[in-house]
Amino acid sequence: MSYSLKSIVIDPISKEKPESAIILCHGYGGDGQDISILANYWKNYLPKTIFICPDAPEKCSISPSGFQWFELGNHSEDQILAKSLVAEAKLNKLIDEVKERNNISANKIALAGFSQGCMIALQTGIKRKDKINCILGYSGRIISPDYLGKNITSRPNIMLMHGDKDMVVPITSLLEAKDFFNRNNYIIETKIFKNCEHRIPTEGSSVGLEFIKKNLY
Image (tube, rainbow, N blue to C red; front, top):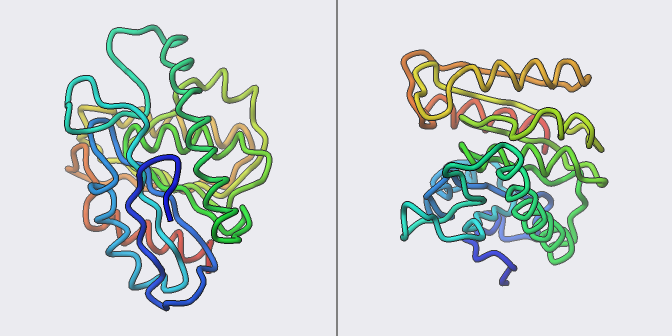
């Protein structure tokens, strides 16, 4: 089964029709293969779940073998937001395809993302009219708090995790996102990893699995 975004698809290990889906969004310069490492770990504990790990829609400008959800570069915040909205539309299309082709309702779909993948997952997830189940984000941030605050449509449960030594997306990004979601009446969980740089530590994959399992199962 193909999707509008080229994707690694991991079927439920139960071999039955999936009852839930997780869409995993990779970081800047990565691809679906990268993020599928998480899916291949989680699948053993989520036997009724299908995993979709798409390549982002654009070739990465600084890593020709990888992909980007939107260009970063030397752009203003407004320009980055405009580019992210294009990616958001493409991720929304993928979510709709996953729903329709697997006959899964939005409330049985989780979004997970790392870095830029976390950013696009947050923006897309809370703007959808049909509320998805939950969002799990690693090492990301809110692209434009002012814009997002004016465009809240639904309130899925959210968990954000971050390394305290992250030099790519600073830990302040998690604190700012936590404040944003608290002010907007979300159920939000956070986890900060000590002596951790811009990556998903082993504990992060385990904590994320428990969050998703609690919400989807």
